[in-house]
Image 1 (cartoon, rainbow, N blue to C red):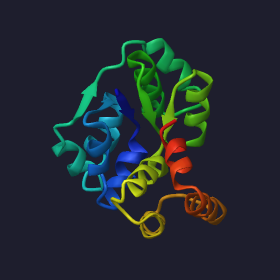
Image 2 (tube, rainbow, N blue to C red):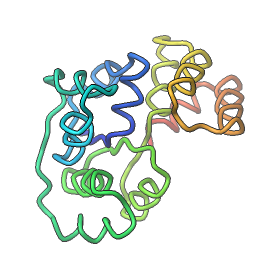
Image 3 (cartoon, one colour):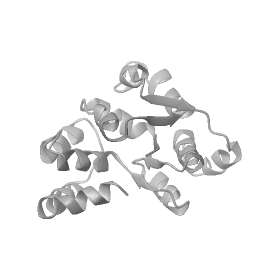
Length: 169
């Protein structure tokens, strides 16, 4: 499966030392140049910068359709726009967390998941405890409302296989 990732999931997973999950599930991740710039070059010493730079399984790729990027930049930041366009160009699953970015990707018919989806997959595989990992993620500054948090845990507890299936779409 070809996978493109935006910056927020890379940073969030790096903050909780779970970036390796992307390699576990997808083997190779593509990121557009702007995402690399956001996370590594402009990221400095922040979470994710050195981790992403060191990952040989994260490949930076240039977006071809610059016009589509420019059109999406009207309502999205450049990294999100490039991630969406690169995902479309590659026919890839897109890992993105931003609500507006997810909406735009869905409108283009892209398959998406996010940081929480990756964690749900890992939980189903017995690789982590979902509740403690969500707690760690929230403590690291990841935006997740109490309502969403409770809903994820409740649905996961009642039907973990269903939740993991949702994480894959």
